[in-house]
View: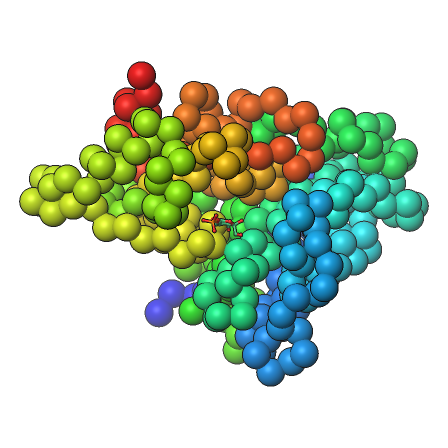
Length: 331
Ligand code: P6P
């Protein structure tokens, strides 16, 4: 069996992948690794600890925060703040961005936007959930505190992005713009080890992921595409509907097996539900780096102007041919 390659060994080997100092990327990814290992420990025993259920609070989206949401958010903030590479963060669980005020952080060259625990409504029913992160070079002057312009950058300015999925195994999948690689946590050594090198999303697929409960409220083009998914195809079968209600889990499956994930606009949600900064842009970076397409229905997700931290955007992303077919229904 070939020697396992740890995440740090991989980053060191691929120094040309990160156009800035490799040490800084591995520093930030290690911050994420440390926080995700702590979160993984709590997720794995959530049923036993007093950490299930609601935190009796709401985030800016008006969504009830789960205790683990808040716990995960605090873990990432603490780890980034003490790491020295990150000068500030924006997260789903914080109304505004957080500019770190300690000296070591003010000299950090990066900001990180993240959803600490996406799909958290699934926590109490033991369904896979995930962390999504997006890393940008700061625009503001090094030595000062981070400011809003550091976060309102287009997705195509990301220097790295990825996710951690807490599922049957715990995986970290990330890109720095030179392909997508997946690392599985080996609990026996506490290291993320390369398990899915150079992930390529299959050009076509037969899985579609959408909340069909809202079908009547979706635009005609989306309804036409869903009807297309239900027709028989080359294999004389309709596509399979797979929708977990956890973006990371749905997209991870489609990334590996091929498929399309759609969260469209609707009468109820004119810009869809998912957030551009810390959900759609990082997942779009991953999908496009794996050879797929990530669109809002009219243009690439990563070209969308970002005007506010919690801005929502419709999403159609996954296998190239499936997304192209879905976009062809636009009148
Ligand atoms: P709906 C989880 O709350 C989440 O933000 C994503 O992880 C998931 O894809 C989506 O919302 C599910 O939303 O409206 O289908 O329940």
